[in-house]
Image 1: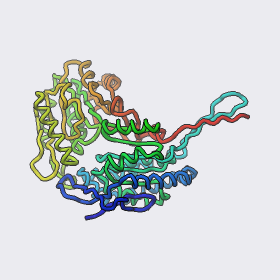
Image 2: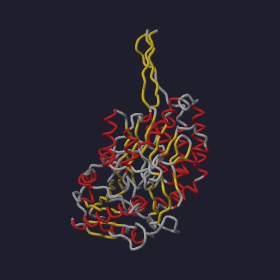
Image 3: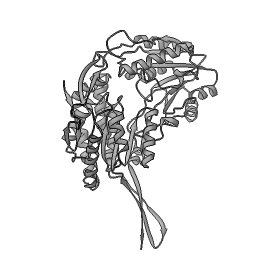
Image 4: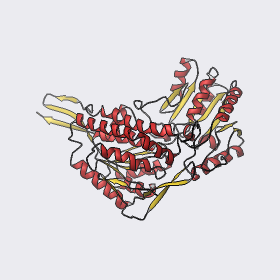
Length: 478
């Protein structure tokens, strides 16, 4: 059994409590593929102490911005070098497609390349006060930045926040999810190490959220927090951050709706559905989990969606031609099953699926429910599985009302051939990003975040780096 360790102060180390281990399973076959050392308070203390020492040494803060950019590009190059080996391990621990796992490493590298271009563009301004005062602003890093990363995109989302934090000059302590920590603590850490990152600037502590994660967000020397995950956990983290008056970047859950107008191209709707709710078994916070269809085309849309669901090949991420991969864990699979039962009990109709697949591993059928009402649990709560709820509407205002009728506001979409209606609907929908005639249209350069309880922060794009910087004003009496 391979053992995976923390990466602290440039070294791989055991937990202070050496015998405390966490087994990591392959969700496609339920087999143990590795064990991580379970971090406790003392491990977080070690990591934060190393990060604080590195920050106070000013090795990164005082580094010429162009040299910092070169270092970030070396990290990117090293990440690309291990994309195949790292992708294979990520595929095994997460269950996602092998191609997607390898691409996640390339995307992580792209984050470092992208934000390396901003290291010399963190600019303040001069402010006119009077002829006897020169006043200006400068952006400075916070110090030690703590990052709690989810299991669905562990490598990509580490890079998404870490590249910003690093470009801004912070040192960082990362706590990956206990379900998918292996590729992070091994290959990602190795890439950082091989790039020659000075000791203590990047640290990775594995363990449970209620132990290592809680210790990290409550540590007095952590000056900024980043979290992606559920609303429930996000609120706990926000409370902890508020208690210490430190800033937090939070990207939380979603219940994103696609509004299908009567003139929509149904082929585009179907293609977007395959990506939007069935890729990665629907375990994406901005997944297309609701579809709001005009009654005049509902039957045709459902017919095409039925054919789509029936065409999807279910299997492990490293199997040839697979479309639908497993749910991450037995606990999550049971949650999806419970939602399926709830939908039927509430009066929804199972057009396709709704059950666990009879095979080893945590597989759930591609699922489409029709006759869903907006007040049903399956239309309100984030399911995080390959589960599409289809709702019907009569007129445009009703469609928008249904789409906005949740506590979430992470993403939304509209399908129409009328550009005027596309822009109008995009304006009317409550979401941090709105997709038109497709799904997941963004890139590293496009800001990502939510409205309402999906969070208020923005990751990606040039806007994101400001979350890792604080503003200082300087006034000089002449």
